Amino acid sequence: MTNLTIASAHQLAGMIRDREVSAVEVLDANLAQIAQHNSQLNAICTLDENNARTRAKQADEALARGENWGALHGVPVTIKDIYETASLRTTAGYIPLKDYIPQQDATAVARLRAAGAVILGKTNMAELAGDYQSTNSLFPRVNNPWNLDYTAGGSSGGSAAAVAAFLSPLAQACRSPTL
Image (cartoon, rainbow, N blue to C red; front, side, top):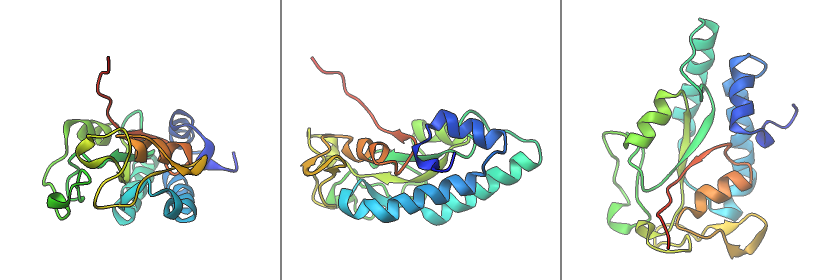
């Protein structure tokens, strides 16, 4: 496969596990896509390139030793900005949290890491997840990748836009039940 950004997370996990492609190559493809498109979309509000690169290299080294970390070994994943992510700014799109850096991972993030995921960064969202549009006072509005004049919706618009625009093969988000 020449364009790694269009592969599903499942496909990428298999390709990485079978050593058809490295986790670093997958990460580089996603980073190139982010560099090209995120400035128009505003999907990713905090990019963690250095730590993602370190983790991707570790994933490749682990496979070389015969270790498999789990179903998402080496697969890049973005995290909705409302979920605490250890040592990575977590704002929930809310000004009082603009400099908040948690010491621990939320359970969902910890489980993704335990499955071998490479945390690529945080996705933009509605302030405190309280709106059906992904707008907040910290970051620009998340735009729909198919029509930049429209929002990507919310509250997990950054997660949706990141996957739709192939910035990330998998994005963690949340869904509240609706009536």
